[in-house]
Image (cartoon, rainbow, N blue to C red; front, side, top):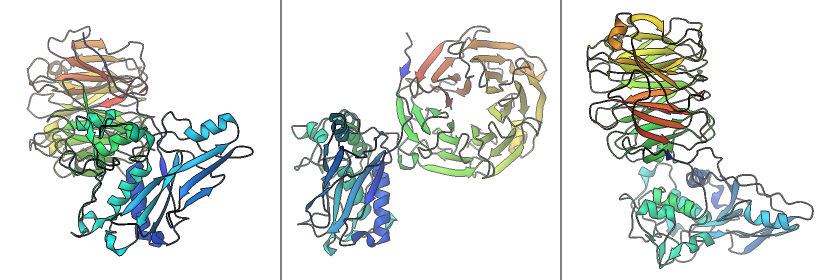
Length: 589
């Protein structure tokens, strides 16, 4: 029996670290460069924290006093009626001469509350079950010349005998978040090893800790990289948090969002082929990468700031000609019209360019295909709802514009357009199929791929309506050859507000003006009204394409061998990439 793979929902706030310099009596952070580096370290350490922290605002009979080590002199200081803003942790920072070889030290903050029992309970937890820290901590940095810090923004400039300040600051902020100095950390230490579930999953076993039981053992590494939480800061090297370092934050009680693609630096999938899924509006700008065979998640990351909730659109193809699927992303309504291409082999960003004018914020849809036979996929961008039916084709090797035209010949239409690619006329070159967007009828237009590769726009047949012309939800489209005659069949899915109906017509007959039905079925519940988004992928590299359909939070891959003219084809894969709460749907590629 085929089992649905259920994963967690992705819709979360973010924690901000507020740096307080009021106790920096030595003016160590009067230097703006040091402040900038410390702010950057705070961003790195907190960018994946997605907990909701209720503000602590004492008043009347309810008091809240924090106890903090003064970073300037090491003495304990009590601050009464301290206010902690919503979703905020406060770190008091400063500099003084430390003992021995210490570069910096983080000391956990404590607090006392008086008043009603409800207030006292709330002020000790901020409404959370596990509390690595209620309000924050203090961090003291050694200000002796012997520390020999490198204060540069660019890590490549670190001298061989210098210690990188950004690395030290990020390391200490991890301590301030509870690593090595909190009860949840100590509770997970068994026989000198850290036994938190997330850390063990990343490392493969319980993680050895250092002699002081506050760091990782200096002899371990992750993916051949030194860890940030090594007790010894290497000279001449900048270190950023590894997945193992982030995992421990989850184990001591923090909730983590996906990492940013900018910090991924690893293969996207577990092989050259993968399935990409982007979350739609109302949720984190997350892309999930899944095994095309088992549906297991191999990666997850964000492609925009967490404040953006307009949705992410995805496509996959070999853009750089290295034999690996690469990822192409674009943002939905409210986002900039930027297209990003990301290497499937190593996670590095390859190209970034604007699909349309910078002022356009209506959302961009993307698809890919090699139109000119150079082994690199071209990128096709279309405007979404609010934009015209504009289509732009970009060269995969350079990002230059090859073609720019209206896919639906109605300059007054503002519902956008959806695109698919595949060989419609059996000439060995992928052609372009355009479907009208929201507000338009189920209208299709087709353009010769060989002509587009040379910058010419040539239609292959007259536009036609694939469903009833009265429908105004638009359509999603896909192309693949079902019967090995070289002519791609045309698949269409209902647009937003429509049912999850998938319909296909014969490609060869279509060129002759005849609409011959090849498939007709519903994916998911027929009562659903979110439409159905389509992609064609050869998921198991057997030379036969699968149809990937997304409706609501669900993604299904269908076997197209022996496809019935009516009724559902066999399922090969089914999953809920981001959990059942993803009501606005997902995009697949």
